[in-house]
Length: 91
Image 1: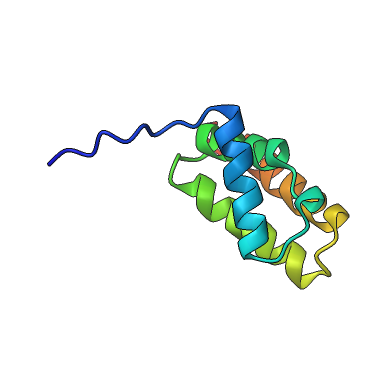
Image 2: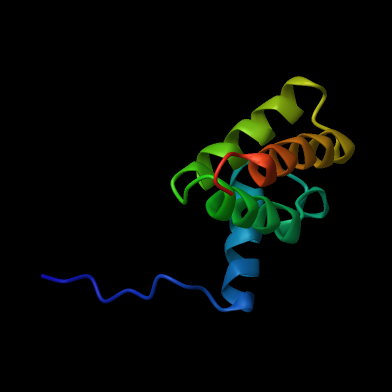
């Protein structure tokens, strides 16, 4: 049977999902920038390949967490990965 579930989320559903995941992982919601991560995913998907986007977001988060996990560390890791993706051969 085909799955007819929509694969895009309206903004309010994305916000609800973000809040639910933050609660599940005991993360303060104010520490999560959806726009920052979506921009990273866009840069990687367009500059490298679509499947590299979620992997890159995970790796940026892992790197930031290992460096202390502050929002500044997240921003720095995302910036580095985005710059790498934008300079990737063929992008």
